[in-house]
Length: 360
Image 1 (cartoon, one colour):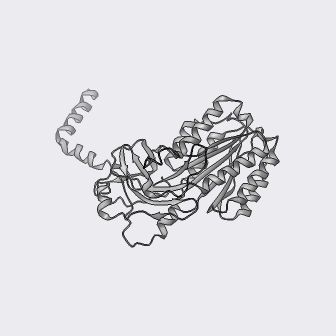
Image 2 (cartoon, one colour):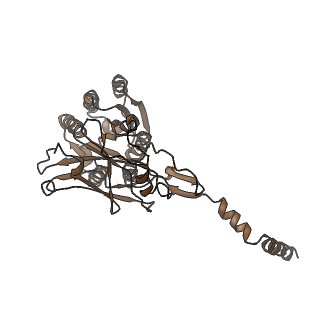
Image 3 (cartoon, one colour):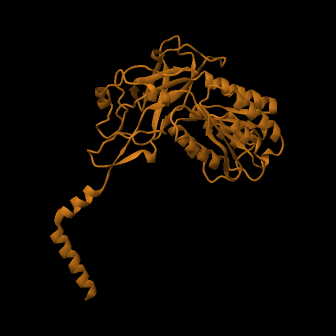
C-alpha cells in the first residue's frame, strides 16, 4: 500500500510539473567554457654543432596550434625585452573567438601602454629544486657550491626561488629578487630521507604557474625517485600546460637506472628544457653554466590562439621559414592543455574578461 501511494505521488508530480521543470534544471546548469590567454613559448634555435643561432626576426618563425596557423603577438631574443609584433585589434579578437565562448584574448589596442604586456614576457622567474634526500650524503657541499655560483650568475633573471626536497618539499627561499636570501636558503639545507622527486616537482610547477612571463625550473637530482605517488607524465603535462621549462642536472647515479634516464630526458625535452648527467662537481658547474647560457639565447614568442573548439590537449609546432633556415634545429614545448582552474562558469552572455596569470 505504501509503495503504491509513493508511486502515485511520483506520477502526479511528473504530470503537473511538465517539461518546465526540466527547462529550469537545464538553465541552472552553468555553461562551461575554456578561457585561454596569451600563449608564450621559449624557443632555442641551434645549428648542427649545437651553437645558438642569433639575429632571427619574427618573420622567420611560423607557429601552428592544432593545425591552425597563429599570428605572433610579441617577439624577443635573449635578455632583450620583448616587443609587439602587430596590434591585436578588437576585430581580430572577435575573429579569434573571444565572443564565441571558446577563448579569451586580451584586447591590445594600438597605442596602448605596453608596460603590463612587457611584464608578461620580460626576464625569467627561476625556481631551483635541490635534492636533499639520502642520495645526497656524498658530494653535498660541492652541490651547494655549484648552486650558489649559479644563483650569483643569474643576473638576467627577474627573480629566483630556492626549494629543496626529500620526501617532502621545503621552500627555504620563495621567489624573490634578493639573491642573498636565496643563498642563505641554499646553505641552510641538510640531507636525509627518501626522494619524492616527482611529487615535489609537481608542487614547484604549481607554484611557478602563479606567475606570468618566462618560468623555468632547474632541478638538481642525485638519484632516482623512490617514494613519489605522482607519475612523471602528469608532471611533464602540467609543465607544458603552464609554459614552464624544466632543466635537470643529475649525477651518474641516476643514469645507472635506465628508466630514470629516459624519464629525465623525455620530461625536459617535452617542456623545451634539457637534461644533464654530471660525473663530478666540475660537470655540475658546467651544466649550470650551460643552462645560464641557454636562458640568455632563447627567443620569446607569444600569440593569442585562434578559435579552437578543442578543450583538451593542443599541439604546438614551431618552424623556421625560408630554405636557408630549415637546416637549424628548434627546441620548445610541443603543446599544452587548458587547465581546469581556467574554466569559467556562467550563462552564455557572461563576460569572458578573466586574465590567466599562470597559463602559457
